[in-house]
Amino acid sequence: MEKVMEKVRIASIQDLPEKMGKTVRVGELELAVFKLGNGKVTAIENRCPHKGGVLAEGIVSGEHVFCPMHDWKICTTDGQVQAPDVGCVSTYKVVVENDDVFLLI
Image (cartoon, rainbow, N blue to C red):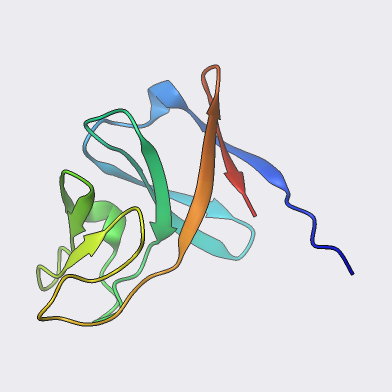
C-alpha cells in the first residue's frame, strides 16, 4: 500500500514571528513551528524529550531552540538534542507557497 502525503495549511508566513516559536495543532499533533533568522520555517514535536518542556516557548538561536525548562539545546531541522544531553524530537516537513505555510504529514 502506498503512503500518501497530506498537505495541511498551518499558518500564514506573516503569522510566524521571526526567531520565536508558535504552537500549532494538527489533529492529535502538537507542533512547535519556527521561522528562523534565515527565513527557513521548521516544525518539530512541541515537547522536550527530557521533562516535556514546551519548545515553542524556548529561546531560538540559529537553527536551535533551548528548552525553557532546563535549557536543553535541540536542533529544529533534525530534532537532535545537543551533547552531552541525549534524545531527539520528531521533525515534520514544511513547505512555504506564496504566503501560506503547509505541513506535510
